Length: 346
Image 1 (cartoon, rainbow, N blue to C red):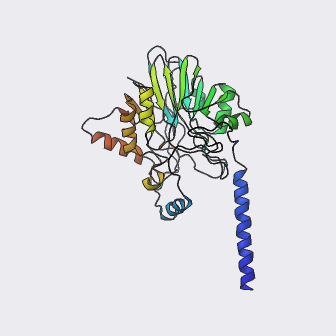
Image 2: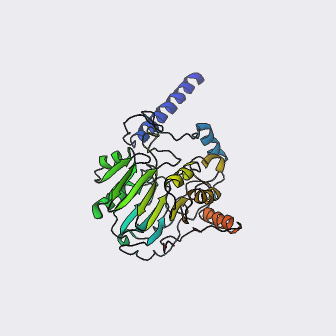
Image 3: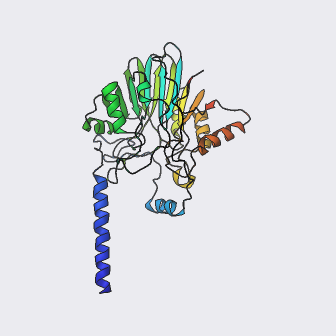
């Protein structure tokens, strides 16, 4: 009898697990198909870094001591950005998470926009935002270009992209294969780009460049599309958007090809525990090093304080960045902007 019950229990676990797996696979994105390269084996993309194992994930989840984030932070929205920034000027506005508005050369570029309440395929589960976006959607200037670093839900938010397509009709630039997801959703203007590939939009030259991360939308589609950072070249200078990335040699590689960066937008949050997060999320100390590697005159912090994704607190990353920077003999020009705050880049 006991053996029979055990078999039934095991069968139920298998059935439930299969159901969960199949359900998750329902959210899979289309995979890229193309020639083999130094970062694509014909099926999967790779960047040479070791992936976290299932054992590491289990260890993190069983050992973690996650700080409590506030349920909600009330704050007024930031001032409406200017319609355009022309000539040799450059302006940057931090909106939330990895959503940043870069204005230069008469072109408005929005990065990894997310205005949804959750970074999730489900409206009732997944990481929930703790504050409103710093700039209201209706206060955005006309967006010409949207840069999408990869397909994770906190960086590629289809409801936000659908609204942008309807109201702004921008060009959507992403790593190879992510454009297929947008096209399948009926979003026009999507282009997939390989690393070091360039395109021009409204006089701005935009290049996809390597970073260190991974892609997936479900349990079944890991690394079927390409993750990417971007360099934007305009009459207002060169700006770099890192996307989601761990620390690596790619920063120095970008500097070799794009010296004299005026601005670098770099992630600092979701970095704890570092033994688990380091390959995919750089820490505040690594972000400071990344600015030095890039040779960027000014850096702006992102990827913090919006969604509880890891084991650092809501404002831990920016405080640690500012502490480390202040302790240096030569302080770097690395800004932590308020949500909705915009500044002219020197």
